[in-house]
Length: 474
Ligand SMILES: Cc1ncc(COP(=O)(O)O)c(C=O)c1O
Image 1 (cartoon, rainbow, N blue to C red):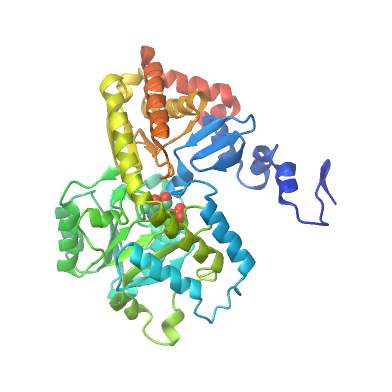
Image 2: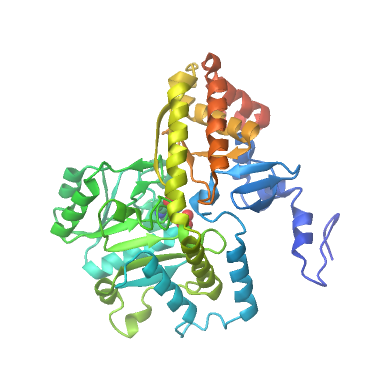
């Protein structure tokens, strides 16, 4: 079959490699045509418009065979790295064994096994579990469960929060630019200044809030609560009858160096959302855990036993994936490894901060680490670009880390100037050295003449002049 001029796709047998070969070389331009041209522009601007052809563990390889270290980690979901042999084998077993899928009016054994295994892993034996397909979906489910269980309409969340981008989750998002254009959102959501128990007490005082949602470590900027704050928060929630919901979509199951980051902070939430670490990236998966008493108030009759549901939530591939991931996390001591490697990485980066200009703070827990930059040490404000200096400096660093050191990183928000490191939890001591040395060299270089912002602009102009021109005219 001639699919398009010059491209032949055989329909006689399904051949994935031939599809990759056919679409791979020009995927950027075609992504622009078929999916999202402005996202393709973004990749060109920041230099991520390159083609990776292989991934294994924490590494990626490009077409030239060069090896990269991935500290973006699929937005912190690739806890076991790519293509973990145990997970691959488990998924192959699931396809071979082929338990009948999606009968829907059934009690899938693999869902039972995964719920049991997950509860043991996080040591919450009395909980019930509701499976979902993504992080945002776990937040949506928790919002609905909280409303139905309490009979209250409202929600509260911290400023700078990120709980996902579906309507409910977006309604609790701290970033105005992400909400803009999508209002009206879910009514009754109250934003509370981060880590301010007094303000939270005031926000919950009228007892109309169903649940307070928090990330144990905020993903945007990698921001931690001061010691004791979350215990005070839990107390305020108890006193006002508000459910406490930990969004552990990112922190949970090892990323922050423990099974549950909220427990490290000394709190036992009423509901817990997990996703990234449970999926580990191979098959989308998430879950909400909560007490039987809460779940029973939602699913309170035969008719209402399906009052919240979704088609794919207990599918055998996702369940198998979750079971294999928990098996590997346990078997290979990955949670402890995350804590150990994270401490080593923070220590190494603090060493860089002590000797090289450009870092204001290194913070984090486990392998969820933020490097907050000190822009004045790296850049002279340029007239007309003053409010973009932060972005440009962060971008110049991300680019140098990628081009010179083959290290994938991201800057976490428009306004924070924080480079976020969330590599697979399986990284080695050599990988820690790789990251530390990459920061040392890059910062040393960018601090020269405080030229980081200029380099940021020049780099973008070199890579995608048309995009720079169009965006600057908007
Ligand atoms: C804390 C938190 N909650 C929710 C989400 C949304 O997850 P998803 O992108 O799978 O919808 C994220 C994603 O980054 C997250 O970090």
